[in-house]
Image (cartoon, rainbow, N blue to C red; front, side, top):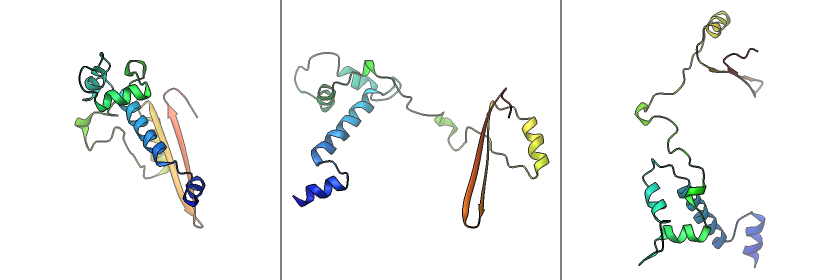
Length: 138
């Protein structure tokens, strides 16, 4: 059919494969939940033993894809403390002059420092980034 050829040219998976891909992704994500996550106990409880009455969707997914949460690395649910909402975990500083910038760099206490610069000349954009760690010099 013409639509099948169009799907191949557009790099689209057939619908059944696409749904299977989404189900697999969801199963792996559930299996990788850390112990602090609200769904962790529910997902791990589904592995406890044989199903007595009704097979839940989580049971079906875990059985279909063979995901064992005990064998997968756990990813943290949050990247930083949620009580610090609106506060950034880093400090931004823009010096007024080159001399002030040099003084600030000599007195900085952070272990990791990132310096960036950007410019637009003749409608072209340029950028530079430098990452420094404590104890390493340029």
